[in-house]
Image (cartoon, rainbow, N blue to C red):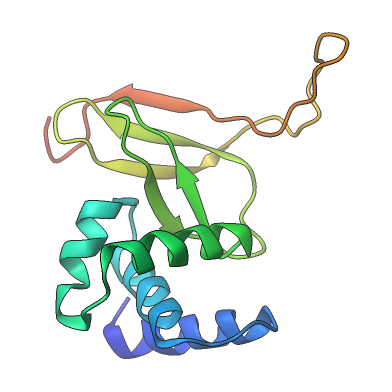
Length: 140
Protein backbone atom coordinates (compact mmCIF):
# COMPACT_ATOMS: atom_id res chain seq x y z
CA UNK A 1 0.00 0.00 0.00
CA UNK A 2 1.32 3.46 -0.87
CA UNK A 3 2.14 5.93 1.92
CA UNK A 4 -0.68 8.37 1.15
CA UNK A 5 -3.28 5.63 0.85
CA UNK A 6 -2.07 3.98 4.09
CA UNK A 7 -2.37 7.30 5.93
CA UNK A 8 -5.93 7.81 4.68
CA UNK A 9 -7.00 4.27 5.60
CA UNK A 10 -5.34 4.58 9.03
CA UNK A 11 -7.12 7.88 9.71
CA UNK A 12 -10.51 6.42 8.77
CA UNK A 13 -10.01 3.34 10.94
CA UNK A 14 -8.81 5.27 14.00
CA UNK A 15 -11.67 7.79 13.63
CA UNK A 16 -14.16 4.89 13.43
CA UNK A 17 -13.17 3.79 16.96
CA UNK A 18 -14.58 7.00 18.40
CA UNK A 19 -11.36 7.45 20.37
CA UNK A 20 -8.78 10.25 20.09
CA UNK A 21 -7.02 10.47 16.74
CA UNK A 22 -3.36 11.07 17.58
CA UNK A 23 -0.39 11.44 15.23
CA UNK A 24 1.32 8.42 16.83
CA UNK A 25 -1.73 6.17 16.32
CA UNK A 26 -2.01 7.26 12.70
CA UNK A 27 1.69 6.78 11.96
CA UNK A 28 1.94 3.35 13.56
CA UNK A 29 -1.21 2.00 11.90
CA UNK A 30 -0.13 3.45 8.54
CA UNK A 31 3.27 1.76 8.95
CA UNK A 32 1.55 -1.58 9.59
CA UNK A 33 -0.69 -1.10 6.56
CA UNK A 34 2.29 -0.25 4.32
CA UNK A 35 4.27 -3.28 5.46
CA UNK A 36 1.63 -5.80 4.49
CA UNK A 37 3.27 -8.41 6.75
CA UNK A 38 3.78 -8.83 10.46
CA UNK A 39 6.52 -6.72 12.04
CA UNK A 40 8.28 -6.86 15.38
CA UNK A 41 8.47 -3.85 17.67
CA UNK A 42 12.09 -3.38 16.62
CA UNK A 43 11.22 -3.46 12.90
CA UNK A 44 8.45 -0.91 13.42
CA UNK A 45 10.76 1.28 15.49
CA UNK A 46 13.21 1.28 12.57
CA UNK A 47 10.40 1.98 10.05
CA UNK A 48 9.17 4.91 12.16
CA UNK A 49 12.58 6.42 13.01
CA UNK A 50 11.91 9.48 10.85
CA UNK A 51 8.60 10.04 12.68
CA UNK A 52 10.38 10.32 16.05
CA UNK A 53 8.08 7.92 17.90
CA UNK A 54 9.81 6.77 21.06
CA UNK A 55 9.87 3.14 22.20
CA UNK A 56 7.36 3.53 25.03
CA UNK A 57 4.86 5.36 22.84
CA UNK A 58 5.20 2.66 20.20
CA UNK A 59 4.45 -0.06 22.78
CA UNK A 60 1.42 1.86 24.05
CA UNK A 61 0.09 2.54 20.56
CA UNK A 62 0.50 -1.10 19.52
CA UNK A 63 -1.39 -2.21 22.65
CA UNK A 64 -4.12 0.32 21.89
CA UNK A 65 -4.40 -0.82 18.25
CA UNK A 66 -4.68 -4.46 19.33
CA UNK A 67 -7.30 -3.54 21.93
CA UNK A 68 -9.34 -1.71 19.31
CA UNK A 69 -9.15 -4.60 16.82
CA UNK A 70 -7.13 -2.49 14.37
CA UNK A 71 -4.04 -4.70 14.70
CA UNK A 72 -3.33 -8.15 15.94
CA UNK A 73 -0.44 -9.47 17.95
CA UNK A 74 1.24 -12.70 16.90
CA UNK A 75 3.59 -14.69 19.09
CA UNK A 76 6.55 -16.37 17.44
CA UNK A 77 9.19 -18.94 18.27
CA UNK A 78 11.86 -16.24 18.74
CA UNK A 79 9.79 -14.80 21.65
CA UNK A 80 9.23 -11.50 19.87
CA UNK A 81 5.67 -10.29 19.39
CA UNK A 82 4.84 -9.32 15.83
CA UNK A 83 2.03 -7.02 14.79
CA UNK A 84 0.00 -6.65 11.64
CA UNK A 85 -2.87 -4.41 10.61
CA UNK A 86 -6.33 -5.92 10.89
CA UNK A 87 -9.83 -4.70 10.33
CA UNK A 88 -13.16 -5.66 11.84
CA UNK A 89 -13.63 -8.36 9.17
CA UNK A 90 -10.37 -10.10 10.14
CA UNK A 91 -11.38 -13.71 10.90
CA UNK A 92 -9.47 -16.17 13.02
CA UNK A 93 -6.70 -17.60 10.87
CA UNK A 94 -3.31 -19.31 11.01
CA UNK A 95 0.11 -17.68 10.63
CA UNK A 96 3.26 -18.81 8.83
CA UNK A 97 6.64 -18.34 10.53
CA UNK A 98 9.81 -18.75 8.45
CA UNK A 99 12.44 -20.66 10.41
CA UNK A 100 15.26 -18.93 8.49
CA UNK A 101 14.45 -15.22 8.23
CA UNK A 102 11.81 -14.97 10.95
CA UNK A 103 9.14 -13.48 8.64
CA UNK A 104 5.58 -13.99 9.89
CA UNK A 105 2.68 -13.87 7.44
CA UNK A 106 -1.08 -14.23 7.85
CA UNK A 107 -2.56 -17.31 6.20
CA UNK A 108 -6.04 -15.88 5.74
CA UNK A 109 -7.16 -18.93 3.76
CA UNK A 110 -6.39 -21.24 6.73
CA UNK A 111 -9.23 -20.67 9.19
CA UNK A 112 -8.93 -21.66 12.83
CA UNK A 113 -11.72 -22.88 15.09
CA UNK A 114 -13.66 -20.28 16.99
CA UNK A 115 -13.60 -20.13 20.75
CA UNK A 116 -14.93 -21.29 23.12
CA UNK A 117 -13.11 -24.56 22.58
CA UNK A 118 -13.89 -27.53 24.80
CA UNK A 119 -11.97 -26.73 27.98
CA UNK A 120 -11.51 -28.65 31.23
CA UNK A 121 -13.86 -27.69 34.02
CA UNK A 122 -12.93 -24.36 35.59
CA UNK A 123 -10.83 -23.23 32.61
CA UNK A 124 -11.74 -20.33 30.33
CA UNK A 125 -10.22 -19.98 26.85
CA UNK A 126 -9.21 -16.43 25.87
CA UNK A 127 -7.34 -17.03 22.66
CA UNK A 128 -6.22 -19.59 20.11
CA UNK A 129 -3.14 -19.36 17.89
CA UNK A 130 -2.15 -21.64 15.04
CA UNK A 131 1.32 -21.23 13.53
CA UNK A 132 2.67 -23.11 10.54
CA UNK A 133 6.47 -23.23 10.65
CA UNK A 134 8.72 -23.75 7.65
CA UNK A 135 10.75 -21.94 5.01
CA UNK A 136 9.26 -18.98 3.11
CA UNK A 137 9.53 -18.57 -0.67
CA UNK A 138 12.25 -15.92 -0.27
CA UNK A 139 14.46 -18.30 1.72
CA UNK A 140 13.73 -21.51 -0.20
